[in-house]
Amino acid sequence: MKQALQKLTLPLLRRRAEEESAGLPALMANAEKAAHSILTGEHAQRKSGNGEKFWQFREYDPTDRPQDIDWRQSAKSDRIFVRQKEQQTMQTVLFWCAAGSGMDYSSTPSRPTKQQDAVTVALALAILMKNANEQIGLLDGTMYPGRSDMALQIMGQRFLDADSSGDLPVAANIPPHADIILCGDFLSPPEQIEAALRPLAARANNGIIIQTLDPAELSLPFAGRAIFEESTGAERHHIFHIESIRNAYQDKLKDHLSAVKDIGRKCGWHWILHTTDNSVRDTLSAAWTITSHEQFKVHS
Image 1 (cartoon, rainbow, N blue to C red):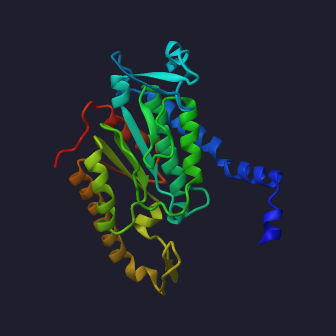
Image 2 (image 1 turned 180 degrees about the vertical axis):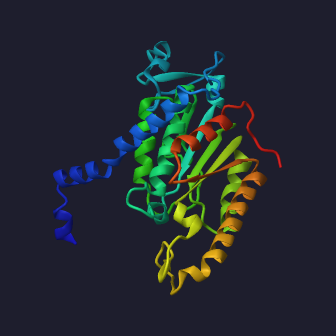
């Protein structure tokens, strides 16, 4: 162990860090392309949250825009302050992307993984929110909500750095009147999903569930022998004729999707199904149209 630690020199650590972050520029480029297609299209535009009424001073954070700095207030101390405005404080959108090992799945090499599409949708929505002067942040509280390009970079890197335990969302501190956008496969048991979402819905203003799946998870197009394994590797099931369970599997998954959608409805949230063989732009357009309404809460 000691020898292994000694091998972790600074150049090696830097190289590993660069390898880990190598996927961010590509994901960010895809997200920016998808967001641009919405901005240049004929889709509803979310109203700006940049109000005029003064609300409070707070200390500057790297996610803030430099133009929001109040230099007069900052000159009174050795700290830098930004001047928040009332609507700006109220308009906050928090994002979460699942990071469980099951999100790495893709049924074909040419198709993006579920996580790649989920992160692309989340980042594209964050770009649109930022351009509308909304504050964007992470549901887990690991970054201060902001409206700068740095906030987007931090968000993207956090998504890539997330550990493998994130099958369901866990919130830290949710600001008043915040909106929440969740991107994941949501294949956990419905009772666990509801237990995770109910507390969020009680504290948030609005929410959208973007359930992201590979098309093979919907149709089970395989033939012959197959092994179903839990993401934790704790349990394995051998199926010798997968055709014999296809209809039952499809019915069970259909029931599960209905259950997730119903949980969202009970929470007063919207539900969108995204499959990785479909365009990210279509899903982004649907989500952006929902958020563009002043009150997009679903009433049960």
